[in-house]
Each structure stands twice: as C-alpha cells, then as structure tokens.
Length: 358
Image (cartoon, rainbow, N blue to C red; front, side, top):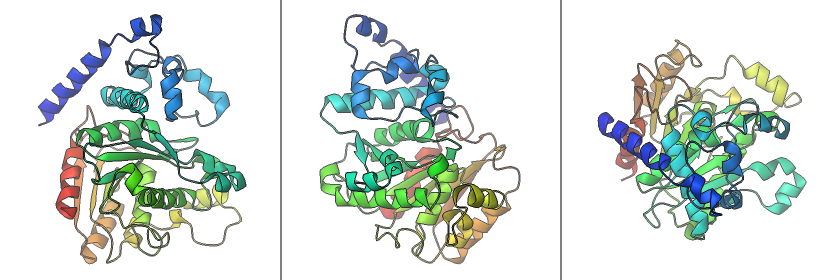
C-alpha cells in the first residue's frame, strides 16, 4: 500500500511538472488550472482565478502580517510547501481554480457582515470548500495547527483536503483566528460557528450535516478535542455532534504554556478558556470516536507520552471507541505524512471514521 502511494505521488508530481504553465501564461492563458511546483508564490497568488477563489495562500512563519509576506514571494511552490506534500498541495490549488471556473464558490465567510463590522477580526474566519463526488454525503472539516502569526490552513489544510477529496468526501478547510486574535476562546468559537454554518447551508453545500469528521492537527487538534465535549463544545454552540475526531500529533495538554497564553491573549479574563482544559479532562460519556497519532521523534511534543496515556485512559473509562497509533519516524507538522513512517495514515483514519458512523 505504501509503495503504491509513493508511486502515485511521484506520478502526480511528474504530471504537474509537465503542465504547460509557463507557455500558458506567455500566451495569455493565465488563470487556467495549470499551477506547477516550479511556479513562484507570487505567480500563483497573482493568478486572477486564484484571487477570485479567495483561497488563503500564506503558510509560513512570519506571514501572518502583511508587511512580512513579501520576503517569500519568490520561493517556488516546491520550496514553499510543507514537507513532501508538493504534489497534493499543487493538486488542491488546481482543484480550487477549476472549481471557480466551474462556478463553484470556494470561499465562504463564517460570520455575517454585521458581525464582522462589530468585530473586524471575524473577517478572516473562512471555510474553503472542496465538493466531493457524493452529493449529500459526509463531510470533513480540516483544522490545521497554529504557531505565532499563522495557522496551518495552507501547509496542513490543502494536502489533507486533496487526499480526502480523492476519497470522495466533501472537505472544508477552516481558517480560524490566530496570533493576537486567539483570546476569548476565539478558535473554539470559530469551529463551533463553522459547523453551524455548514449545517444551516447543508442543502446548498450538498452535504449531510450528521456524522462529519474533524481532521485536526497539533494545537488545532486540541481545540477540536475540546469541541467534542458536550458541555464546553458542540453542545454549548447548539451544534451537531461530530461523527469522529481524527487528530494528527495533537497537543493534548497545554500545561507548559497555559500561563503564557493567559497573560498574552487573555490578561483580563477570569472565566474558562479552552487552553485550560486537557483533552483527558474533556472526555465524557458522549464523546465521539477518536483516531489519534504522533511520531516517536516529534521534538515539539517531546519524548514524554504520559499525556497521551492519560487521554487514552479517559477514552477507555468512558467507553469511547478509539484508535491510537505511533510512528517511529514522523516529525511534527508533517500533515499527511509523505516521506515519513506516517505516510498513509489518513487512509487508516478514514476507514476508522467509516467504521464508526457506517
């Protein structure tokens, strides 16, 4: 299975590299679904149809603010994409372009213009829509991690969206608030409101509102794990319960940086904040099934796995179906795991999801 996947990725990359993107641009065909890994990020971002899509195309540290973005404009997509996900990231970008040309609205604002007028930070909260092959079928929300000025919408979201799209699922990549807008439970609110938005527009978006999966990474996975709690999460938002959680290298415990988060993001807050709750504390009898994994050589999570044991024990205590996997070689932020021992993990996770919801 892994050899087939490697060969498929190599074939996809070779196909993308042979697309006549340069010639197409020279002949005035810019705006076609002809993005290739050797194009610069500036070229991709200036693609008029890509601009029309509204897709957020920034994914490197320091690019969360406008004045720092120009420094990486001349990097090629091959250099810019996270890890070895270049073929899948490129394919997702071309899919977005083709969707626009087919009349599909790619970007959906989670909050209304009235809400955004009151709080401008809400304007960045968006769902990037990749319709699946099964009308009215299940959907997945992808929630990347976040670090400093940016979240993993691009680096983790796009390759994951492509992989799930190829399996026939409709996928929404959630861009949520980060950096100085992380306070006041903002990521949790953004996830809850995103689920409610999809539910309210299920017919228009051609999805079934039940049995959806949240595919989340790193600190985004911690937010997803809190959202899966009936009291603090989906129940508090009046939202549909997730059919499954699929968590890649989740930060299940914020114990080291809780005080920092509180001082930086919520210095005057007295009430509960999502980062104060460890995932083992969030598990209850109504918690959805969970697939979660990490790499043994993940230097961000470190060698201590006691937090994962505590999460697993809580799942067992409450009778929640789960699958825990560890990979010998899978550093942090490898998303779909290409080029690591975790390659193919999403196949296993999708099978787990299907097994749980039918």
